[in-house]
Length: 309
Ligand code: RIB
Image 1 (cartoon, rainbow, N blue to C red):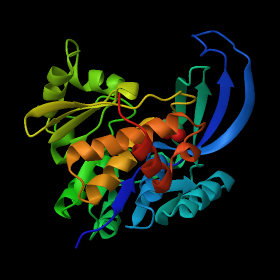
Image 2 (tube, helix red, strand yellow; image 1 turned 90 degrees about the vertical axis):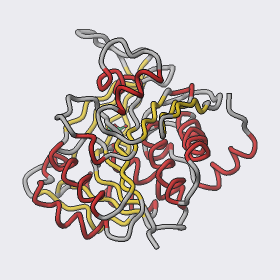
Image 3 (tube, helix red, strand yellow; image 1 turned 180 degrees about the horizontal axis):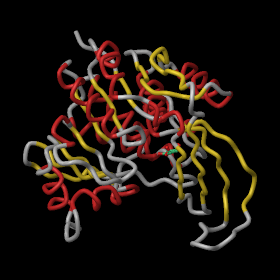
Image 4 (tube, rainbow, N blue to C red; image 1 turned 60 degrees about the vertical axis):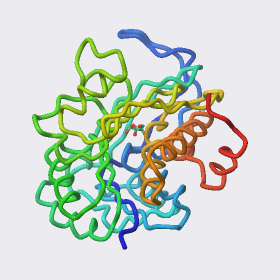
């Protein structure tokens, strides 16, 4: 029987500063204390999946770091959360990826990523990736590693019978046919607009346009408003949870890791989306990327005491 989640993606050390407001172009703002916090969309999703799987299934990460202290710290953090990092390689030429993150008083952020070793995964690594996929149930992808590697890995995941979930983040132009091996695509509002084009403000119309690009199920992540799904031709809204947002960094990643675990456990889609909305809601009440991900016990307690909006 298939079991577990495999994440193909980025690992970054996040350089985080909180400010009163986000700077506009040409503006300098004074910030508060500077912190380095483990992040990267791929690694965040792996930590989310591992903490929420709570040992019930294996979670593996495929990616690349540099031969440096940040890479060591990122791998150690993932392993501590329960992620198998044996397929996280080391680049001989590139440093570990970093992200420069500014967070304002409302918890909104701006992020600039220098990919470093994340850009050093090669399409030729794909066959090694196949071995990691074997026997797993769900594969998670994002767009902080080279598109040709993501495309090749999604095709192999499909061939190996995994459910494929793509977080099309950060938004970027995608080659024709890129979504053909995607079972579930999970854009946020910015990424959905980039995929659907102008004039698709209505969630159903937006999701239909994205589905027409080849993805099976479309999940629009709507932040505090939860998410909207288009699955088997039916569109439905799954409400979010009212919380006090402190930092929205990695909320979308927490959502995707949670969704993968719920689906890998055999949970039906609506309930899996409620689970993912709750995980994301908890994450925005905490600072940073990976430290903000709840444990399974915290999420179960939240769900038993909170109702969706
Ligand atoms: O999604 C949040 C993540 O985006 C951060 O952790 C940062 O590393 C960038 O990858």
